[in-house]
Length: 187
Image (cartoon, rainbow, N blue to C red; front, side, top):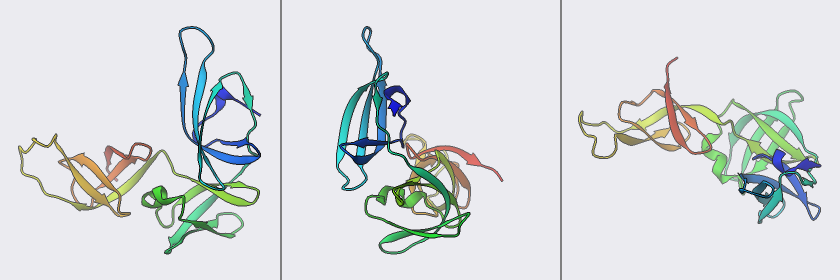
């Protein structure tokens, strides 16, 4: 059991015997009365979306899940391929339902996979990641009409708006939740 106030993005909850992954959560504290958590969850089995309003002190059943650190190997037309860092076991995760993660998966990098009943149900993407700029437009000095940002494409195909001084080949840190530029990385 987990209290409504302890639910976070990425938590797994059981509703009607079916596992749901929390994709969004928002706390609301009205002037009087109890605080509540508004939770948007995605069904692991069929992809349906469920929204709940839970008082922060109320307990709700959580799904018993396991976590394994696995290395991303490659992606083919239908699946992502991972290898467990300890047991060297291979896992195939369908792209269907995980399309939003393809731009954040880098070959050779380790990610935490969430398992429920021996099946992978989620790939945890780090909050911030470093990418190399693969394509960048040149700009003319003094050209700040467009808000002093430009679009660039990373080595994984992710498109992000960055300041004008970022050049092709440089490394940048991206906030993966908002898909926004954070800083230039000097190595």
